[in-house]
Image 1 (spheres, rainbow, N blue to C red):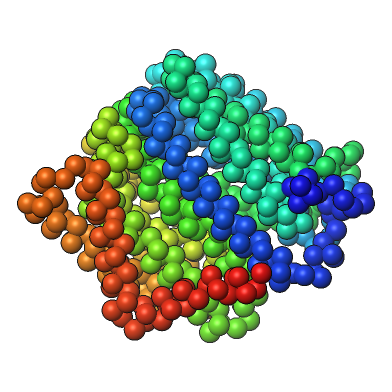
Image 2 (spheres, rainbow, N blue to C red):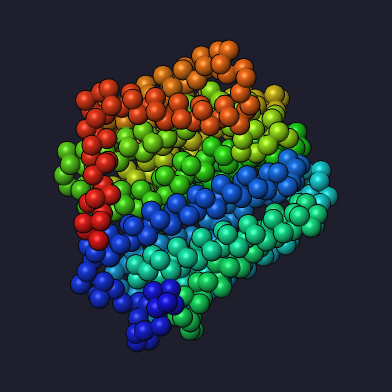
Length: 507
């Protein structure tokens, strides 16, 4: 219970980190185990939410909520402004500094909450959906709740209390899902998703304040936190631009086609991105911390980056093959028959899964090499290339947007982003090609095999659900066989197989 509540210690217990160095390696290993276990729970909870709610609510409901949720992801970043990261990363902080950051976070949360709520009539007019004027002010309250928790969660992470953070975040996912299911069964429809969002934010705020009993005092002068305010400025702006660019697909679809089209696109996109984000989530902070300490050793840096990025791409390759070649059966299994029109959307988005792991890792390079200015410019270039592609596919609905986004990524956007990232630093285009080569080969072979089997007489007698399960096994085993057939792939598989034993030995 003390790990979750953390009741022992003096008044500055949440600020000090000197005691952590006595067993830093052990804490890091235990933190890794907790993170992996937490991520597994998170995947199950998120997958359950997708499966259950898709059968209780209609594409219209998801589309209406996604129209405003597209703005939420941007506002969440604006609300934080990298201040929680400053608390985590700074070697020494005072109670007054954290209090000042807390009140800035709260002020920003109040500001974005009020602005978002005030925009409700504008959003209703823009989309032509009056109900958005009713739900937007309620959804905006979630921004206020999470703003109250930003510094408390940062202090928990600063203290390496990974179990407490895991309990809070996973508990919020599970409680919010249960609330949404109860509301949906009661016939609340769209409001079930609103309730899910508010409950999720409230549980995070309550859990963070319970687990971290630090309480804010009076704010100090701004000169004491000037460096902390500047921390990650370019990276934060780049993140805001990136999230705005990522939200534009649903905003444009909602404006042009309406909520049903947005709902189909949103659920297909969520189904694809969820496994990739949950694979990248635990790996990113570890890779970033490691690479940051290797910048003076170019060859070691290159090897470490390629090893991490290639393993991520290898894990995602079967997912890409399955989504591209078996989107229909996957939609039937996970979402249900009422979502069949989302299949071509998922199939085209599956193409992006081939290169998505690599583009995720570009932030590792920029941040670890302190190239945040270049990261900001790359985000602007990405947005400039993304928006025309979305407009080009817009007349053909959700499928057209997915197709134009995927094709433009392969032909233009991703090559440009890789070139920008490779202009400086130890990692060049040759390393990017190496990262993608084996996973792309494996995904291509698995995709071709699944397409061939779909047309065979053996597949004709199977249900969509059975086909999805069979094709998932085929995608995984085919990719594994391709990796095992190549000496380099066998080496990676052997190293990966040793990881659990190494973690247990270290713990």
